[in-house]
Length: 194
Image (cartoon, rainbow, N blue to C red; front, top):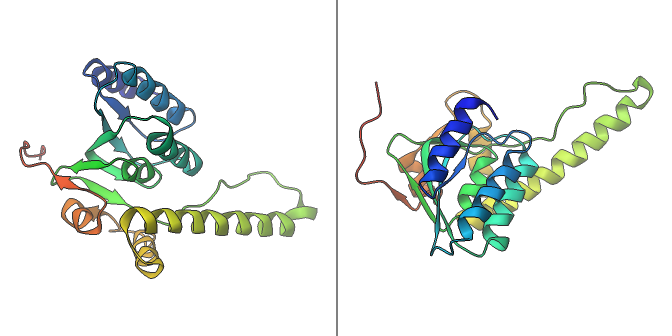
């Protein structure tokens, strides 16, 4: 975790708030540790600020499962700027999800990592295994969004297809509220910087 992100994390923790940045290697475990520290005070809920481009798919699911099933204290999320990709799993595991009018969201098809080295003799088998793994990830993701957003399979797939279409795939806060990604938009806020 770089110095700027660590400084933001320390600031939020000093205010009794967890912070979810990009889900790079080890970040989910750090957020879980911070949530555990905050839970020791036995608050009625734990605030968490999310400012994340997403990251490692499996870590997003682990964090979501921890928040929903293991922590035992509701987490109220507030999106500062953006919540994309794997970070949306943690967001949707929170009962209260607040965004600002300028917050953006991206839900898209996610894939497992790409292997850079391979044995040419096993290449076809490796590609087939990768396809099967990604097919399983897609169905896990589709089921998650169907459950969390209360959407049919067709509706959830349409959202993921739109998010995977390339440029201009961000969902604004008002559409996120309509889709069920957010539960509310902050009423009092400063306008974002130009």
